[in-house]
Length: 299
Image (cartoon, rainbow, N blue to C red; front, top):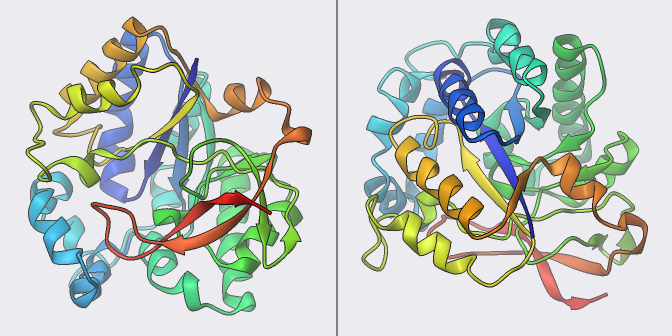
């Protein structure tokens, strides 16, 4: 009955403001979480190039992007220079660790990773992951133990780098249970602890779900006892959707879940004896583009 809380921090705004709100909320509920940081430049404004991607405009219209991110953030990397998150927000990142939470790597440049990694060269992929690793070590003085890819976007080389760079476990995929990934027929030893539940931005605005009933919907998905990984975003649950996350934390505790970090979730598993699954790129409801998904068939 472990439910790991994985917090993706995508932007300068989310790091500066959303993280602090989430720290207060987690402290009030006496639970720990894993924060995955974007460590390089915030180029959120460049995401507007996705306008022709199937489903992108529909998602933007459903999820109140301007109110969640703010006009200034949506100009970073275009009309405004993108702030270097790792340089500006290092003390805030260390405050997460000092409060007892786990810190890990989300990405170097969030928009660049999401927009390019699927077709990127091995050299580009290595450079982006190396930059994120170097900045993490500069901020925290130690290597990162975990990585969760921006937008659940990966390529074969990135998966192999999760082992080569020494991560203990990663959460780069969507799926149903922990597994050892098999990429192009080759086993990658670094375990994947996939996100198992839909995110708020995938649900709100679809099938009659809104901010008032989305917590109830998610709690219905977790009524049957099972291990889960829930991914939230500092820009959403750390901002205007904070009351939804508050209700989720109360509801999951009432359901008997142990709300925990990815580290403690991994400790409860036999990581050396996980099933092997291939990873496929496919779409999921509520999100534009394809994601790295755990294949249902064992390799």
